[in-house]
Length: 305
Image (cartoon, rainbow, N blue to C red; front, side, top):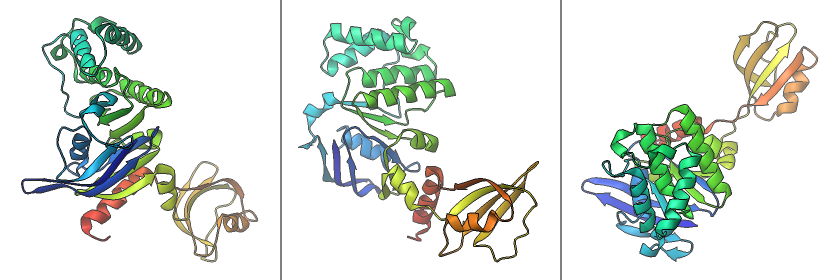
């Protein structure tokens, strides 16, 4: 769907992107991650043809990106861009017509979205009369009204309360289910876990990690487990096939976090514990995307890679 190849972008005295390449597959929800100032928004603006790269190329559906593709892309910018003094209904219709819809079709789709998101009374309202979260909801409708093939969302949950954030998350999933490819930038790592098929992590203008979320998390497995057991508390003497990282005492059970010794597997944990106690739970600890994000950014920042 979207192929970003060796993009370089330099502003006066600042390198925003350094030889960044990404592949976003059709039908994916792709997360673009990174700290503030990493280069995410610069890359998004290039894909939307707001700015041009100094070098490198972008391909959309196998064709070099050009003006004809604008109608097939929907863009929700981090800095909202709706006209504050224009009535919302007319503004949405105007923006939809810029994307190729007739007025009648725009009105029909707008009625659907207004009813779906509880915005029926907003036709005559002006953007400046709305809260930040309500403005965000209106901008989201403007982004998806023309049913684009690629939807680009820059910090889409900014300004939303938890209820509306969940509502928009569900809409993103529904649009994806209907065939839209989603590219979004976010600081919310829980959103990455819930939504993304694949991610790319950018830091200091460089891509430092990319791939499918499941594969990335599995690659960071470090043989760490949680074990809950009942019975007499075990006094570990160092002969067990694991190191105890920490231990917590409950009302009628004990929970330990352990790290396997080299050359051992999870069966060895059970082999050691079962003769001594009743094992209630054995669960591998797979690092979250938040933990991976912090580790990779810190490594990249301190220059230890």
